[in-house]
Image 1 (tube, rainbow, N blue to C red):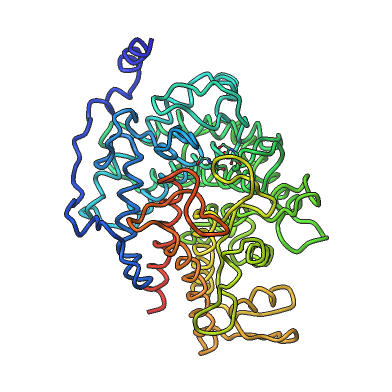
Image 2 (image 1 turned 90 degrees about the horizontal axis):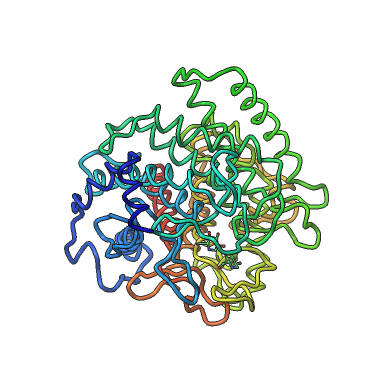
Length: 510
Ligand code: NOJ
Ligand code: NOJ
């Protein structure tokens, strides 16, 4: 059955080209320096320089046909969430994890020149990823089929590209939006395809179905990114909106002809979604964004998903586009969200109790979990723990905030509404409302404090990864040892994203 299916696939679809290319690439420098046995945890910088390489290698091990994978079962471009097959079984490809992970590779292509060590390989892997998604989109799954488009809400697939047929939290409607944004950011690089892809094909066959999915489903409940609650969610709405907006801009920048009905549907959805997001996810009882408003106040609405929703819809590199998406990283409701998550989790997780800034008495960044009410321990349900993804995301969000502050060249105004956040890093009293002039010494001091604050989250990660730089999903809230799925692809990806922003900030403020 499998063999028959394979033959049909090879004969019928453009994936043939992918399979033919095979493992032609092995261009990454594989000497000992590149892959240290033990990561040097002496200082944050020594650790980052080792952990950067280890993270890439371990991430690549989880991608089919990469130079580092030893797993022959992964089809080309398949990104497995974790190699762990039991306790827990994460040996699947999730649409969300893959769309986010592929962004780390695309960032590398954006930031580096063509002769950089990973360049050719990453371009190829992204192209495999696109071909692979072209195939996955067309599978009939428990979420539905391709004709109605419902199958695009399917959250996960087997690594050999067969549908996953057991019960699960489905649909999960963040996938199509995430995928649109990831793939468009690759197309914008305008590279000569090595697998016979072209932008018209990608737009019509891969992006357009996802656009329709978002247009038809954004008002419907779906399971959240943590796969637990069927409702409307900030993260989901944000990435859906961003996907449509990116597609809209791509259409107009490239004079792509679309029919009037489609154009109308898209622009109406974009306008309605923006209004909806701005109203629905805030509530006059609290001054932070709510992740799943229908559950409030039973659930606090505090959730690392909100931070993820903000950073993954604002890439900071295109101000005009970023301004069209609400809730950027400098939004008070987003900054407050980080503040309240920190406060909650400082108290909630015993390993956070004694953390202090090394340079003063101010609170240190803390290990951040998914959300206060979480009881998933990585294997089953007991008590929640801090997660690597969430902690790296806190670091990245602060770095992006610095980037925005410095690039906007605006004075920073500390008022009642953001005072509590700034108390995390500055010695401020309850009535200290001030204007920090752009580029003044105070401004530079503030930027440095923010950078130290962001680093303090990375130091926590450094303390909990294993001696070889291996990273799982969570670290135990009592003793700090890692638990949950080992070598979680998304953990490496989120850490690499934070490293990337740290580099950018260091260059910017040097
Ligand atoms: C429950 C967890 O909370 C959820 O995030 C996870 O995806 C599933 N179990 C499957 O492991
Ligand atoms: C559980 C997480 O909650 C979910 O977001 C993720 O997609 C899967 N694990 C796979 O990593």
